[in-house]
Image 1 (cartoon, rainbow, N blue to C red):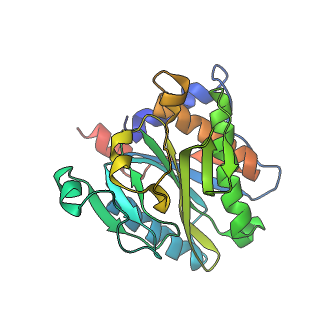
Image 2: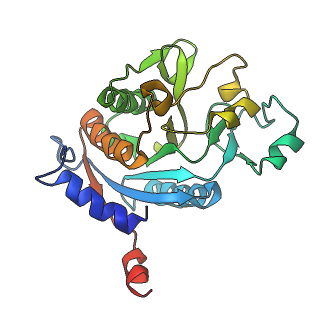
Image 3: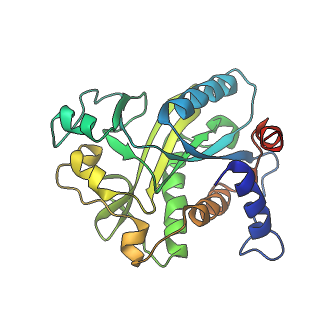
Length: 256
């Protein structure tokens, strides 16, 4: 779905006839601009995050939440530049999956269709919180989403992220510069688990990965999960989460 189509859908879902309304903040001034980017390549959104983080560090811009679904890619954490694969790299190339080094924490992970990725560019000092509290809030947001589908999300001593009965369903990794975040959390909604078999997810050889669809036994719509994520993000962080149009997108749509 395009952002323009999503914006119309969002309006109908969150109005008087919708399932819920977007959370509003009790704390004046704490808000986040939400952009649903649709399906994207990893590189274009990575560059966008870098620009937004630099602007926020310079005291301009606004706190932002980017929602997207990437084309298949493996990303590497800054402390693990060598891909932690279960197969040789030639096999990965045959699958057409790119391997991209990043500046986030953590080890290798997979992004692809059927996975909701949420990137927050947040000035933490303005929100009065530290990095650990923010990471815990991202996990709590996903736990709230899972509860909407009757699933019990949990934290684990094995590592950060969210788990369902010992199976990992969401991974988290950040880069923080000048107290401004980028990167974020990825939730497996209806993802191709076969691609995870090519890697040791998060550096763990024996981890089992799962999806919301696998756990509930039916298809789960990514757009509905995105709606729930924004709602719970606003609830957990006590902020107003407002969907924004992408500049120029509506004009381009009308010109076709």
